[in-house]
Length: 480
Image 1: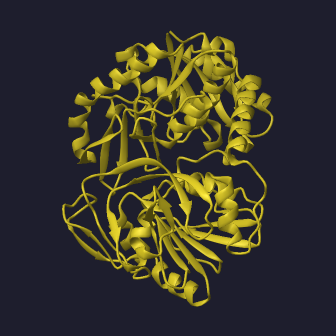
Image 2 (image 1 turned 90 degrees about the vertical axis):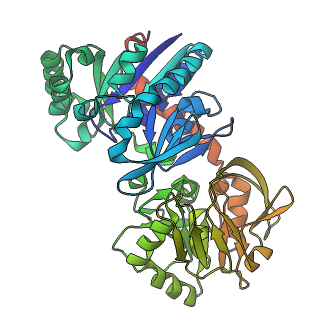
Image 3 (image 1 turned 180 degrees about the vertical axis):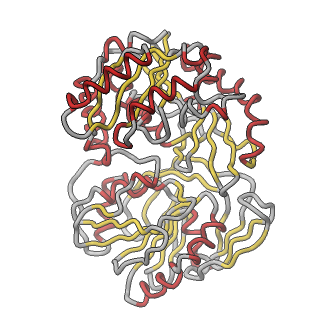
């Protein structure tokens, strides 16, 4: 029962993909392997088989390992709901909400559940591959750390450090990290690797040798840029291309400031008949056939953000041109008449007027709905699979025209003219049959592709990529 940890010289250096690829490579060696991330910060969450939520990246890593996602795989999940605060989810359930300035005082009590979850996974599998968060070089955050070296030392897990050459300055990234680490922390590092190289990796031979000489750490390889990464569910909205595809059916998605569970969009982005445009702050919603308002971790806050961008005006113009709107989860709530948060669950208590495009009202409630669902699309009669992960209940006359039926009960709402629809169901577009039926409503064709099989193929390609470019056997042999 062994473990190995991948830490990064910074955020977004590719740790999540590296761990996913390592998990798939270990599984192909006949090992029972599980992913683990002590602390993650993301609003892109997955509903687990044991009824909680974890970061979407850990759900993908679980898939790479051949496992159902479990709450133990990401025992602390921070879900930002403002510039200075976040909801704290522990072992799949909301513990509290806290300001960033107050979080350090909370961290010491989180180490116990983190270690509990880790040891349960370690006892159940041959190998646990751990992903760090951010960078251990953030030594100002070292006190009470549970995400990087604090966890590695508490659990006695050896560390491999990943640098991102695509950002530039990778030599300083790795050597500088060693320079600022406490000697006892630095002793946990057993080697390094370089990620996201574009071009001929041999051109970095001198830099690679320099890092090894300066740090005394062995190198495990230089990993070239993995071009198929965009076909895997993204955890960071910034990883979604501004424009995907060149199909005739045009979808626009406003990128909300607290956008959540945006991997809903991944299957649509891969449809050859679709052009998917992510609309960033300061940009107007372009002429298109469908606008999707995505989920949000702070619905009232993002509704204010939407209005500040002028997107409410763009939506009215879009509908006047005959366009359609689909709101998912928080986006559904925004489409209604009002959003009432009497207990201040997502921010200051109060009521915000909605966009008024659906005749429903939403009241935020403390109980959070976390469940996988089997549903039937009302308009087409096609069955679909998805999941719910939300607070708040929406009611009103337009609910009499539901988007779907779940266990015989109506779900979602539709305006009388059928051009504005809302639903709490995430993950619906991963269902191939439903995706085809949904696009067919608009006269758009869908390719006969198997989205789940595509993800599996890309995970195998990722493992092949790491097998080719890393010294994988000595790397995995570090685990203890």
